[in-house]
Image 1 (cartoon, helix red, strand yellow):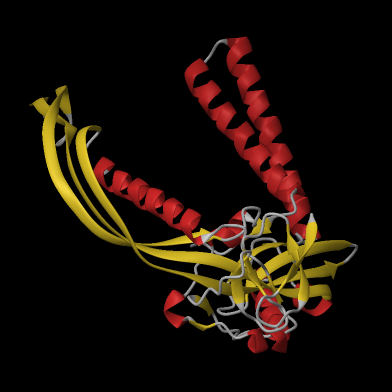
Image 2 (image 1 turned 180 degrees about the vertical axis):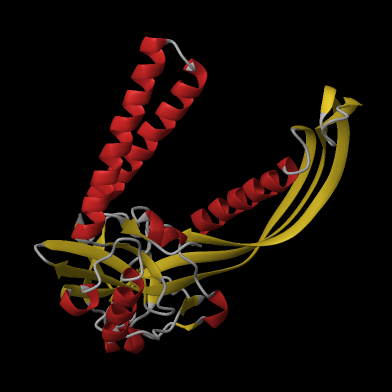
Length: 322
């Protein structure tokens, strides 16, 4: 739901969401709380890919995806584009954990003479383990609770941050989004995430944790606005959406078309494998011959057939791997 807010620094009225707690005035660019307090630790990541470059980068990357039509870069037509500046809280958390637990170990007996490294008997037992981990974690907390999951997880080059400039966002008609998570809440979430990361480190050494002691100190915390191009393009009779990081050209996510040749091949080969797998299962069960091998082989062929048919029929969503 939209409400009206007033900037305490330039006295301009502007729109804000009901849950927004840290606002950025679209006229003077000042970040402030709903109580009117100015927030100074406000940064941005500069735009290095304008609209045209983001579109070119997207089409070049998508055209290399499995099954994408060869004429996609030439025939795709962009319908919409908008640059959004999404808020992220960045906290640096110093963590120290000591632990005591149990790790699983084994004793090996009676090695097979025909196969080195294979044993006739293995006895497992619990072994006491202890240690410590000291880490500095940089935690990204999205400032918008309803932000797309892939946008939440995309890499942010925080070392390239600089003080926020509303004029820079205006160069690209960027829409600067407010944060509905406050600084204190962000610090609490960062502390919990640091604890979880320490837990993963400990669990990489033990199977059971019996005792642990943790210190998680939240240090530097700041708000950074990250520019993302939200694009929509048309190919043939279908429309596809995509998100591209305006600072790095990173393709966060994109739906893209499959070529007719790829779709036909996937559906055709998939159907053949599916029918072959079902046939093999039927033969194994009816004739009661090679039941184990027949069931395994038939099931595998049927599964591969279903996967190929799915790939042939789907409108794939691609994204870069982090």
